[in-house]
Image 1 (cartoon, helix red, strand yellow):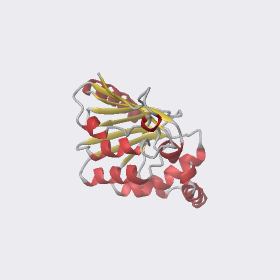
Image 2: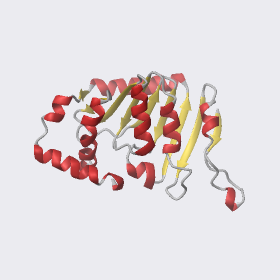
Image 3: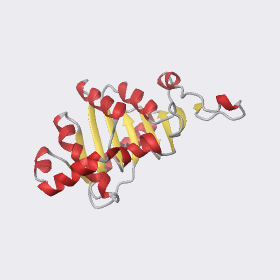
Image 4: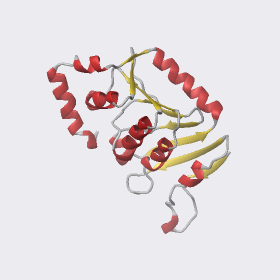
Length: 211
């Protein structure tokens, strides 16, 4: 059942970019799906306006599988608030990225996230291009959107949010498959990184708003 499409056609020019219906999304019945297309030129149509409310309502579990992970602003704050509420937060990332500077910036965050209880897994043997999130076994997000500055602020993105336990379970099984083929990152792994690699990580992090 499609309850809301993000772009409304055949309206006067001033109404062609309506606000996303976040309240309608939160109250969606089972087996509902919403589609969103984000635009960097329209401030009220950026991915964080959907991601932040979804993360805010998490009670038990958040599982993320993304290719590029440099969460900023409200998205990062809601992830950390979820941890403070006792929500398990798992992040699956590529162990070998096709964009090294983004991976370095992500790894600069590892120590900060690990100390706050976020579990980080790096997929072995292959590049991970997933863009998926599962919340509490009932909400799912899939599409083109990573959790980095380009996706959250600059790119044109398209993604779907579904309130469906069967779909969430199917995605979660895929994520569990990836976790079994990943290495869990520990604080000891972070400490073993050489000084020059930590310098590269910090330099990349300083460029995060453009990555």
